[in-house]
Length: 247
Length: 330
Ligand SMILES: Nc1ncnc2c1ncn2[C@@H]1O[C@H](COP(=O)(O)OP(=O)(O)OP(=O)(O)O)[C@@H](O)[C@H]1O
Ligand SMILES: [Mg+2]
Image (cartoon, rainbow over all chains, first blue to last red; front, side, top):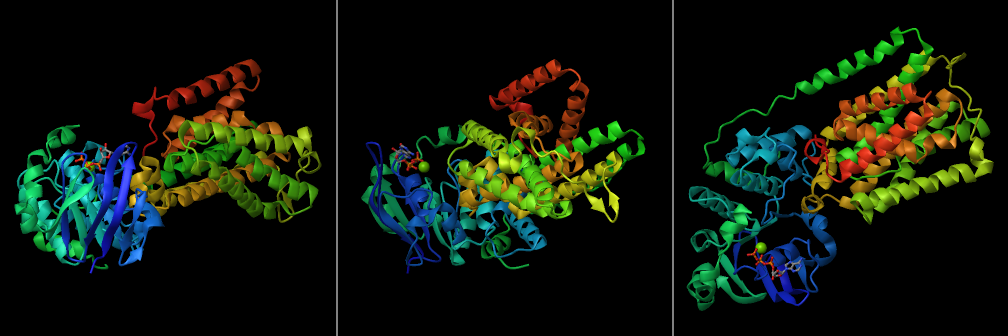
């Protein structure tokens, strides 16, 4: 049973086809990896799944209900959280306040309980020491974790992550991936754009491969990773990742 | 504390060294309000009606500027019609008390509500345009309000305004002595400061700040961006309405020229001087403008020049000349 799904999405920008008849879904407990070369439409798919982009054709369903017209804030209120390819945070505010924003629609109303949740989330992500720091001063890897804390703290039903491990290296990327796998296992439906095939193999339950806006392969992780589609694009995966990170 | 599944999972994993460092102390904040109260008492000790009158203007501007800080400082909306909302409050008080014989005290809630509604109507423009364009659209809206103040003669008294707003009455005593009027304005100011401090620390205030920083991020966290903007405008209108009531009942008259574009610019200056999100610095900005206005009032040419310079300063701020240091930040 799918919790968050895109059905028959098509979207073009000018002459560029970003998505063409794309259907993907994630059920509770599933971590769906999205693979594809640069410009293949991954971010466009994430934007559509989270209501940031109203697709030209197709629909978004949450728990079987058509939510295409709800918009980003509407979907967030229904329990769909996301992170961004380039971290988006409130620069002049503290880490604690940034994470607190993730509780904007949470049922927890008491300020003290909210602060406790934030504290505990930061603690769990190993960034408790950053609490009072202003985001502007943080390193790239720290910002990634703050953004993740912001997305996780509200206990979302579905989570859509645009390259959560980009810019994290070695054990940090592994650790984040493990955390996300654990969160998914606890019953959250999750999509995650990921370039690192090792990480995908380790944590994703299913994989969707996009190329030039088309779904070229989709299925259980092991089968897809061994398939021709991945072999065809693997040379291009995350090619300019380093540039994207340092920019 | 209610549970959070991602949290539980994360806690179980605990892969990073989890140092339980305590949240930064928020002590600094608690010293500010008492300091303000002490400062506010000072003008009461000076036996000069003139000083008290300037201090009252400063306090009134303070309330006005705090309202502007909600919409510009917290929500990041650059509006230029704040004098018009101030005027709505003043006219509401003046018209009700002078023309309809309503007790001046009872006109306070009406002034607040009407100015809040006017603020929300003004805020509709922020749903369509942003940035400098919003400043221009609201500037035009302020001029429109000015046309109404001047042109709707049967109600507003036209160019002459309302010359005979009855004074506030406490028991049998008329509040007309400058020190008493100042005390009232100072009390309203303290209330406004407390309101704004609370607002800033609330989830709603955080949502407004998220809109200022990044509307996409705000929406991704479920913040209803348009609705929050309207409420921010309405709140800033409410502050301006209270300020307008103070002004009308203290001076005993309402005159349209008080509520024109020049004052809108001055309010922006008060707030930008301070750094838009800083509650207490905004009050210093308001006092600075009130004192300067008083000092220059005998030199009309210099006053006009100073206002011109203020307008240039605001434009320079917008164009980023001061951005590094003067960005609205908390
Ligand atoms: N707002 C937009 N306006 C015009 N073109 C766009 C827009 N957003 C995306 N595109 C184009 O649509 C295509 C898909 O872009 P998208 O960002 O979804 O790719 P991606 O798979 O996320 O790439 P990357 O790996 O570089 O992040 C690209 O050709 C891109 O240039
Ligand atoms: Mg992308």
